[in-house]
Image (cartoon, rainbow, N blue to C red; front, side, top):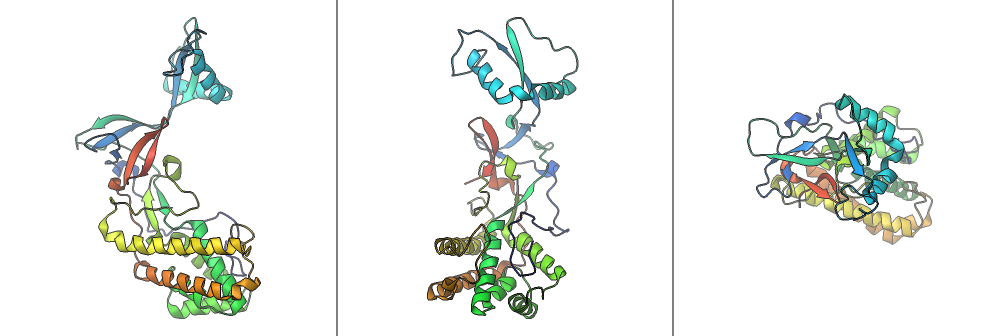
Length: 332
């Protein structure tokens, strides 16, 4: 949350996204490209479930190449899923009613299916893939955004200088200069002077501004999600109309990372977000240069701060099997 003293806390709450942003429905996602399909045509997937595996317990079959019916495969699966066998068996039985006898000399194990490519569909007669629960991904991460806000707040309190915070509010959060300046002054001069409603507005905007968001598969279904670092969507398969926007965003992310390294080296930041606004270093010439770079990067976003998020574009994504795990990643 954004506290009364003007700083973001260490919590993970991300506020509320605008109600008019509707995620692309799963049944509309019909042209995800398969990496190993030479024609990059539509693909279908086998959704997650449970599968039954019958393994012949032959101690002489210990090869590790295919794991077909041998002790090594049994030990591997038993180690991974042994404690969940009852639950997995019950899930399997729901989809496969009837007797499930195990043959003599074999042992049965139940394991979760992974998301895997199934048949390739070259027609256009209907959806080739149903994919629920798309997500909004930040370019500049949620952590990076809160760090730069907290830095501007600490710098402003130390130097009685509202300009960096004011520029952030105007250029990144798209508030008018008059109200933005008043908010910055109130944050820096009197703790608690900014209302809860205004703090909620700022919190939601720093989290959910469209210029910083790209719709795609959720993090749990991506090989390449960077977590709390910059998520680079500047791929050749992104629509060229977004090239200027991506350049400005990458510049902003780079300046924030430089600032972060600086405050960490000077021990001004004591945790992921907690910045010491009394640190004497904040008054030095070095940080004046940091502030100049940040303000220039904020201004670079200004012409894009009213743009909506980039909706799901199947050309930007590919479905890839890596180490037996099939997920999406940004197509490079």
